[in-house]
Length: 71
Image (cartoon, rainbow, N blue to C red; front, top):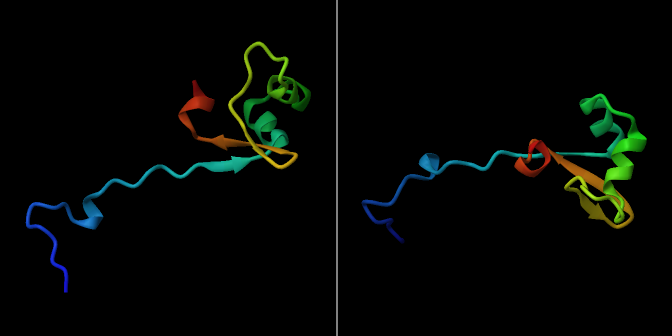
């Protein structure tokens, strides 16, 4: 049996990362009170200030609660 070092933190003491909720452009638009067309326009490659997003195949998703999206 492997014993942990006496000064190692307990597993419950390790902070867990904040889980992000993955949402689509329609839900993001609703939560930001903006038209969905505005959100989709900010994802396009030609956008000067694109919204941080995740591309899953042909689908665009957003991490609601992430630092990058809130800034």
